Length: 137
Image 1 (cartoon, rainbow, N blue to C red):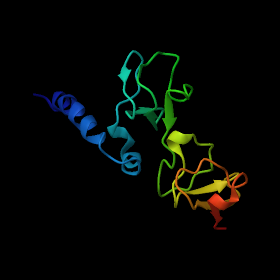
Image 2 (cartoon, one colour):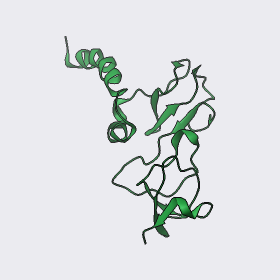
Image 3 (cartoon, rainbow, N blue to C red):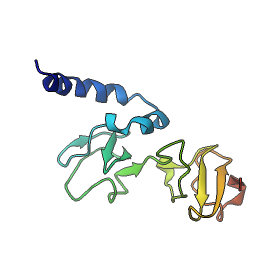
Image 4 (cartoon, helix red, strand yellow):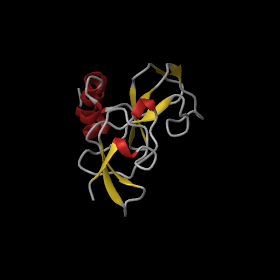
């Protein structure tokens, strides 16, 4: 068996094992997750890679070509804080990808202050709910 054939045989095992990772660990190895494909059955909480970004499935469905993870917001949610070592700019989360206690973001732009979430499941911006954020800079 060639090395390429062996890699292809191992890929499904790697993807099954990656499924048990917590989001923070998963974000360190996005390449372990299957690339999104049209005409594929997805279950709730499956994670897929699309344009280098990790998404979580919100509802079971069979994917369609025009329902990509970046546009079908009722089907997929982006896993936020893509790299725990890099502070991102705040994005409006949904209930499926809310900020958790300790998550840090720039708000409203990368040139502005850093805020740290003081609560779990935080879907508000620092402007909308200041009590949910601690200004760090």
